[in-house]
Structure formats: C-alpha cells, structure tokens
Image 1 (cartoon, rainbow, N blue to C red):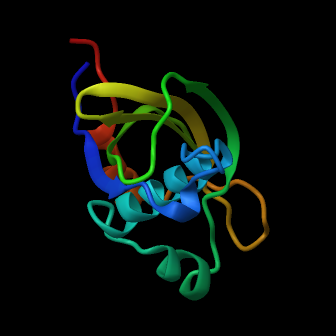
Image 2: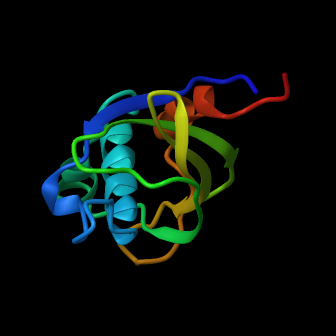
Length: 140
C-alpha cells in the first residue's frame, strides 16, 4: 500500500481505562475521533471548529467496523495511523491502526460523510478533496 499515512501518538490515560487498568473499548472510538479531528486540523487544513461552527458542515461517521487485537494498558504509548481506503463523492473510507511498541492493538475501518447545512450528504469541496487525495491507499 502506498499513499500518505497520518500518524499521531497518545499516552493511555487513567480516564481511558476500566477497573482492570486496560482501555475500556468505547474509549478507542473517542480516540479515533480525536485522530480524525487532528488530521483535519493538520494536513487537511480545516479544523473541526472551522467546519462545524464557521461553515456549519460536518463529517459524521456513517459506519465503523473494529477489531480488538490486544489490550492496551494505563500509560502505554500508542501510535495511531490513518489512511484513506476510498474517496467517494460525499464519503471517505478510513483505515485506522493503533500500535504500541510495534504490537498491533486495534484496527478499524470507518466511513465519514461530508454533510452540509441541509444535514444531507454533499460532494467534498474541491480543496478538501485535493488535500485528502494524497492519503488514498493505492496498490503497491
């Protein structure tokens, strides 16, 4: 697979864990949302504040499928990787991988959709589409 990979790092916090000291599974979805938000604010050049508050558009999740591979524990340093599996007219397929010290902990696919003021899907704006395109996975 080629294409740019967006990566970020985050330490597992106490609030992320259950009583056994491992990441409580719904917290992974919150973490993924944070990665998507950072991807938009970083290389895509438009923060969620800009999208939601200024432009009155959003990128809600339409689908997500996850696989929990190994537990993550309090104070683990996690590395998040995001790539684009498909860029549609109004949708965007994302692939997420979370690792710790080279060990895969979690992976997911997610579909986000560009939604306008009407709360209906709309085509990606050309500038945003152009900034997403380099992250699309292509066969090696």
